Length: 500
Image (cartoon, rainbow, N blue to C red; front, side, top):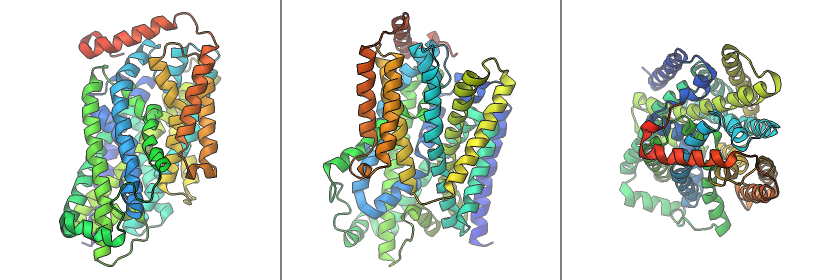
């Protein structure tokens, strides 16, 4: 058999497994709560690996290694900021959000939680939240489609469009039928594949380039400053990279995993598993870039697309069948994120827009059908956007990440930890944060300071100021105290917290 045949066999096995999990989940999905949140029954390990896999996407195996391959360790500050942000998110947001969404009328989406938490009778907050999710997730899903096209182009020499359609088709299929449960369990398999591949590739590669000393010598020949994390950079650039960590508090596809935990107590185990997975993964991604740069330098070769360094190394270092499974880990990263984002976008369309604007009392059967239809529609739009691959994967991800972080991050934190927040304050801050991030990110200012920083700051400031000048509805203090006590009680005795 040819090398290409071996690799295709590995990819077909992987894709068949994902479709099988989607079918298994389909048979266990009967209503909208199951489809959107898996009935709030995720175990901490599933939630942690699902959050990690859906978070990192093709950025981890392609975008980040590509950036470090080009510029050295100055790009690694993003990984540092993300790791800190992930730990803070699991530590402080996860247990309180799990409790408060239960208290707030058993909310199953981020927009519905904001409406119920702040008792917004106008429904404007929920609708605006749903629109923000639709806009930014369209860009985010599109970045995954781009990564899929680049993957097949680099690995098999197929056309960009063909690769994008293959990745999109398989992901849409298992997400369409399996819903949140299918996306979560495919994420577990995909997360394990990612971390194994990110350990194996640099570990084998470092021996082939002469060990750590041989790698360092080659990197110094490329650029003496390549291993210096502050060389050629500025304080603002480092702050911008670290600020990626702020985005975690407002990513709907990540924090929805907290809402689906069995109990607030599960956040402790989830944090340990999730952050441990992340440390191994980002370290592997950094060393993949460094080993790749050294290997290409030693062999006098040029890599046309830096974002394909992981793909090129995997095919060079391993037997074609093994390389096929390693390459499947890249697909896992891409597809896990797309599936999670499609589910959240679907929930925004059905739970937060259709039920509010069109028909409140629709049947569960109709709502699940509409949810699947929404997955299909958003997928098609994202594929159409991805046909123009002028932006890099990292650029697309960075833009969407900042949009969500600026729009929802301060709002979620204030909802959970400041009882005085009002619907008017949240709406003003959220809208202003989203607009600021969008405008800053599409201007020349984004080259100086990452747009999440001004967007986050504007949201936080306006939300606090407007809330202090507006009146909160009666009963909000009682719910705030109940959610806080539930989180504390759940951490001490999980049996006291109901699953639904």
